[in-house]
Image 1 (cartoon, rainbow, N blue to C red):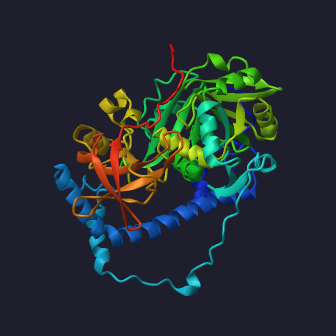
Image 2: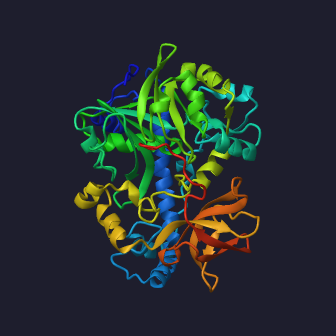
Image 3: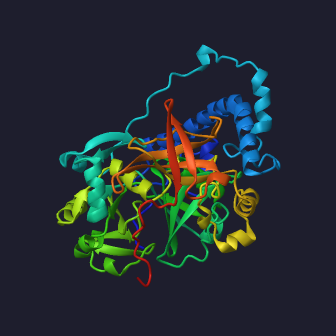
Length: 484
């Protein structure tokens, strides 16, 4: 895969920069700028502050959480083996919560507290294009992005029947090069990256030492390099984590000057094949490069809607022209973030920071398929002991789909209740399904209650709802696989 000239930074340089040494380029395709360095510093500082405050808040609530989880363990027939039953926090959280119950909180000294400043909301290459096409813009993941054009339901249904064009340029596009990159990545994710053939993509999970999920990502072998797509809201943390843990000989390039478009729907292939002949021969999770007007485009046949479709990585300066070429096709209309969320919910796909995070494991999140067979046998990935034990014995909680009775959705934050009205789980995503015309949701429930057909009691804002555990995806996936 041909690429632009990238600023190259070794992990050892990154560590020195964080320790107050040289001022470094932020691994971007653009020249070194203070703004890119400031964003990295802001992300690192913000993460540290968030961890400090989050730790204190979790510790204060820890004793209540531990009591609840112990009840869940009893309900599911588990015993407490080294804190494994704590489904919401690292294993040692129950033990460390107690000191905070009686320890007084010391208020900060006023002179030591800097006035927080609001981070700048950034724009993406297609910002003006979206506004010209009548998009309603909102702030998301630090950027102005379109939430809708003609209405969420209309855009949702159009994507299910034709082809929707999404701008996902906020996501992090990373190119990693050097010797033994696959083996290095396997120390951070549970997938069999070494077996990934050139031109193939694999979904995987970036894990912390407890087996919690730092992010979910796509990894593509673009021989001789490796191309990663990570979530926009976590990309700066992901970059820091990768640079901290990859060897000095491995270089990470953040492709910050490239846009990323997703064309999704059953007629996406018809529209894109007129512009990039040859894409019709690709299959699900396959990637290739194409030339368009003298520019190299990276194309992968995948997406986040459950429909057939493509993700296209391209230089930011031609993104508007390429988007114009796509919407000129009769099958294609622009679609915003609102419909993207309802589409992925129907497809049963988790959203990072909502359905999965550092307090959920791949097993609890029902993402065990991301742990390849060889890795299950060999281990060697972060949190392997805990994750493999959960795989054999089951996690305390499990992510499930719910169909909610009535017409009102139960949204994120809704509670799962037992027969006594006590909280035993939580809704992480919820909304009205335009395709099925019923409310649906994802929730974490005790594993003993995770079987399809189980009736679940829910609570939201003091109102009781009833749901039924439903197999996901709610709407069947329509991926074009090999041999189809």
